[in-house]
Length: 173
Image (cartoon, rainbow, N blue to C red):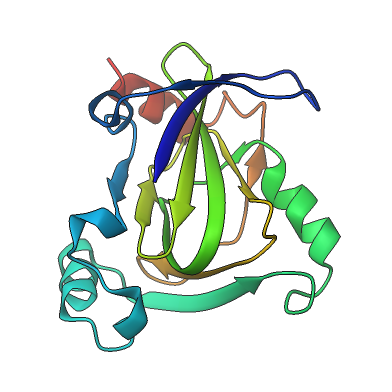
């Protein structure tokens, strides 16, 4: 997994710098395949994943395959995923195959790019602005986990007036 910060301009090339794991992980929870605790090859029966689900109260999960042959309205969906947004609930994703990126904002509103690969699990807290995209392989398979029934509503930026955004910002201090 790779951590980079970015000075981004819409539709420009990325100016990437390395970002330390300890600093970045204060904004979200990340468990990587290098931790050796999760095994994406046996996700259906992985006792560590079962324990995480039980401990965190994840009661709903599904699998999404994102590539042009598997996802209806592929181009439209990718554009939607890449639009900066937040959710009222945590966003939990476990990469079962392929690679992808989550971009989040740091405390100074700069982009942090998180390269995800098979075996990585990330929890983005409710209220954090983020976006998602694929790498050059244009393929990933991910498990989406939820506490309770899934809510698919995204609030595009700006959504600073939402209480969940204010709560998230307060948690950074």
